[in-house]
Length: 273
Image (cartoon, rainbow, N blue to C red):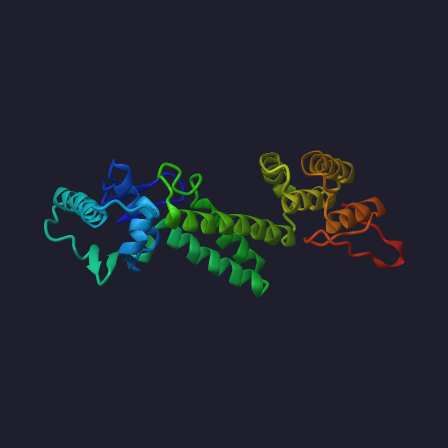
């Protein structure tokens, strides 16, 4: 079994697609996958499908959707030469249902595992492992979470959590790469990211640091000025105090750490790139 939610929803059992075409069964499959091996209660499933306005037939209709998913699973099993019950995969439990699959079968679960390992490596100062693990986590993404599935309340919570985690993974991987001295390699990636996120101060700070360390101080200052102009025009705000200190460090020729903080050298030494 392989289920992917970090992008369009895909799910296959030994290569045979098990994704239903109808919208609500797709929502159920997505929610069960995001909670693989954990019980999703009937009230949670109903809230996802219908919100607070439950139809009279909600319980019966939900059971029908579960049967449709089980038919998909059964058809895939037959096609793979493995006829038999599928209730052990999409199981009924007290008060709800659970999708019982290998943790590695769901890309979101694997993303969470790699993310936790990457953050742990960063925390103990192993930047090489952190960069590798967090990079592998980011590589699992194929687009916005469940981009082709309607999001009710329950899925919206999971989607928000994953999208926020994705941003955190990206920024920490970039920070690990900066600590590893990969500023030249990061400039192209960060230029694209800041283009897509013109108000993101953290990404701009990383780009400014990478450019400065690569010996491109004028370009770094140009990036700062462009961000400042955009923030003032769009939000009426000046850049954060940390970014302003970063600009001053560059103007003074002081080295900066990977957080964009000035680290003045003794005896008037200056960064030369």
